[in-house]
Length: 66
Image (cartoon, rainbow, N blue to C red):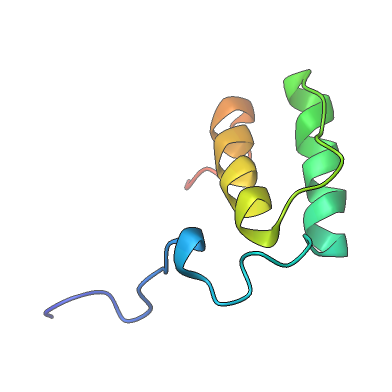
């Protein structure tokens, strides 16, 4: 194979990345932030929320590959 079948696009390059984060993103971030002992910023874009999810998953161990 020459590359991944579903390459992940950088959130900064999303065409909707500047829109307000989605309800599911907010809900998951609330859980992650609570587990990480961090405050969740009030207003995030979809791209910012995605990046924060990645960081908090790493910090909490959630979403880690088995």
